[in-house]
Image (cartoon, rainbow, N blue to C red; front, side, top):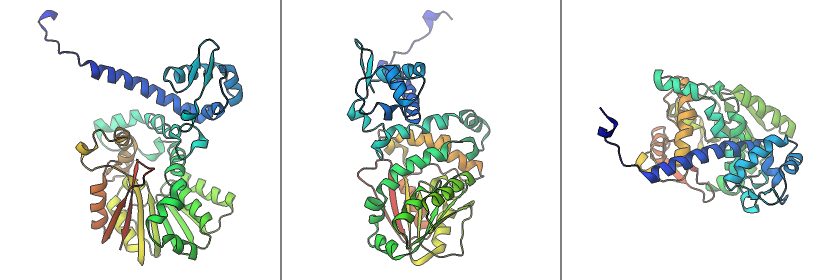
Length: 357
């Protein structure tokens, strides 16, 4: 058949333009992650216009690499380039979302998830073809990046916003209660609470021995004697101890058996105990998530990490995009008679559930 006889569809110009824009944005995300890890944004903040050599010197980096990075930052309008003087400047309004000093609003730290996930792409690809999952060990920096994210989404708002969701809880913590964090990672939330509430006793549990080791070492450095950490597979979770307060910060959906974890927490709570869960906000209905900020980000993290690490353990593969409707249903089916869902004004990524016996 001649080419002239082949029907050519009309070009959807807006879609093509959007795809080209996505390529630019994806490339920029990679470079933003590098800018965070190298400290380049921190070095540029408040420094005024500088040449590439001056910025490299401030950051302690090699000028040739810094110059190429600056090219991307200028082309993406993240930094301002003054062509006559060959200088680059990070505007104060941009620094407010790109530097360590900007935490908990440092979006540059969050961009690190994308290169971390991309490192496991070949393994995830094979799972598309053969099933199964990709283990935690294939994400060597995940807990490091997650700890930074936890500092912003949990620790920064813990005493002012999250704990006050439960009336009287802060007072109980000051008096002294027993607290468990399931899926604690590097333990940032437990470490912060242990420091803030010295009369309470805190325990964190996580599958990752590396994360537990880091948390234990940090507790020793801070001199915190009221917190401890355990390496523990939470599959089929149960505990003989009675806990007054159990938390799960961005952890339930990652488990191989989320329903089992929920019912296990219910069974080990004291009579007046409660379960506080932070997890990804959004709907269980895909259609309701279309157009929602960060929805593509959530589905990507779910596919590339949360879902697949659960499947690697022979689990259900619930994933980060399980949604609030299913979450509330599972908490009730797990034995909690009262489930309240909260959203914090400053946090568009997460929902908070207060589950009572």
